[in-house]
Length: 326
Image (cartoon, rainbow, N blue to C red):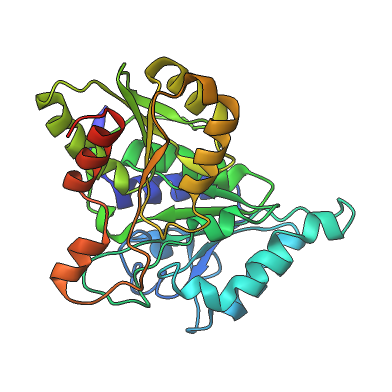
């Protein structure tokens, strides 16, 4: 086992798959000559050439549409959005073309395409560059939505996503690209739709995904000091959701807290709360609780950014509330 950065794990996944399959190509803004806005694609232009590592104009709707057409004709595009905030410009192609084409064509056209890039807040970037759209894309049939939390999962899940014959939304975090973690040497993949029980516990289940897993793990350290034994589950993907792992965990711990970097209305945590109350209601010793962002556009001031986002203190307060501790 070696330790590499999140961005390096993503790069390894793309390089390994492109070496196997010449139909795979990467397209997006600054992915080639500049080596990627976040250096995820560093060195890939030199290795694969300009026909497979393709710089585009600042026109997300255009190059997303080109990628969908390429997928319909047998190629396997990886589309990098510089941020998923910009994917809103291309959402018509993602939702109305990529996600629906298999159904609308009567099963004649698979769309093996990965849309990937950073999601969520990355500091003082303002309201238009700090949004989380995992729940938006997870709402759409025909898409799979993957949100890795560490380098090992990032590589294994991206390889699986590239091999998938359906469109996959692969959401990263700008603040995680430099995160280091152990990544296995050699070939491995991780199935989409299988959550990871990061830590077993008996008092309360905390469920999260993506960048928020780092916050949950920090909160766990504080909760241990207070004698609370937490079970931690990393969803890894939010469409499909591994409901069985969640329900079985709640049946053991009898309490559930969901942590999510998103607005509270119609969120992934809302869906999880509904499902758990439906299938594990008799096991709950407290209402399902959530820690989300505030229900406002993200402000710019650093103090307001901190108030907006889930943090260790908020998680600990909510866990204590479902434990009926003051």
